[in-house]
Image 1 (cartoon, rainbow, N blue to C red):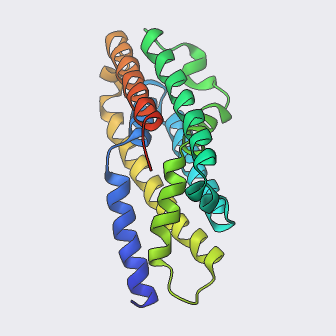
Image 2: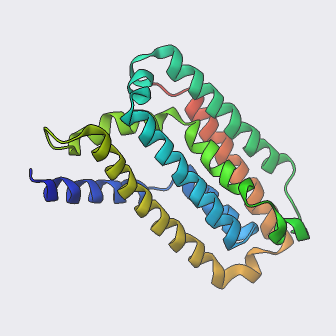
Length: 206
């Protein structure tokens, strides 16, 4: 395939991957609904920063190490599962009934950014996915590092567009979605999703 064909094929595949509901979608929707659009944007930026970090790791060889080392993969996998379980159980067991002034807008900017980024960085499946998926779209003889970052950047742009669309979709329903019962339901539902993802990650095989 030509360079243009490779880029189009990757863009199509990455779009399908992004549109598939998963942990990132759950986090962005829940944060937009309960915390507001600014915090949701920070979470989305954190998620995609995690993708860039994995892209760097793959480009410079760490992703390949995780792909071949059972110990490295398991260590990162269990750390990621523990982190997701911790987030999920907090939401599940201690759901909020209302937004405090801090949660409504004064939370430090890094908070949700770091949560989104940490969740992605501690998920070794992203590294495995990049290691196995990206090389298929890098033309023979092209610089590996530059192409890896280029393809990951395309994935990040698609992810940010999708996250922005999800956040915008919650705005017309903001009044309803910020009610006490809805906030509790959102926290518990998202918490359960996170716990299920943690269990799936912990017991997953390559």
